Length: 301
Image 1 (tube, rainbow, N blue to C red):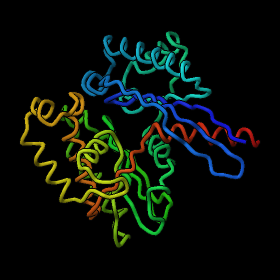
Image 2: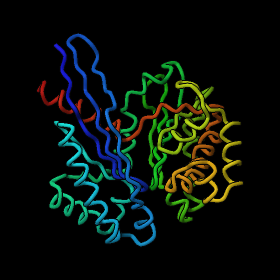
Image 3: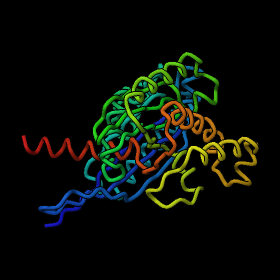
């Protein structure tokens, strides 16, 4: 008997807000299939408010309310049966984050969980990486966001260490990352990578997905450190405007892509990785999986 349900994940990040709708396909005796159905991304840069003024502006509060209402209507049209909304770095550091969450509930009836960096890393690490990784290898998984970046060491298919750092693209754009934070990250990677003979990096986030698409590489093939460095250097020869007009980058991607590359390249350099794999998964995918497995465990209790 085949069963197809739709679940939705809302990821309220520091750079953008995303709605992912997935088909959950179950058939007796077969592994469950998670198939992306629709992805909507709205570039509300909450981090630009919060990391400078410590609060979400009136304008962006209004945009969040409108976006969440639109997401509710889209979920209704898609006949979504379950959803989960998670807010990350910008919302958790904002003085009025809780107030905005309450307004969203009042305005659209959608509830939002403000999650800690460690929980964010755990949700991301719980995505089905086994499809993308070699179980005999060691990886440093790097999920770059606007406000924070989550780092996870995966050894033989299992999570060996995980940590969230307040190094994100929007923070870097606004020159808000201290030298000590970079140093702390370098030490953390050095400490956790030194026991392994060889490490590859797995990258997730909108920026690395874009870089991978531009590279023209086939799915499953890695990008080399040499390619990443060359592309990083090339991007810096273009102005912000030229990146939009000549490289066809979206305006909300054209500025953050450079600090994102700096984070990925630093992770590769400090771990000694020669390659970065891009499986195109992230927090929203992890949220979908968490809804499903929470449902399964509550049904079996």
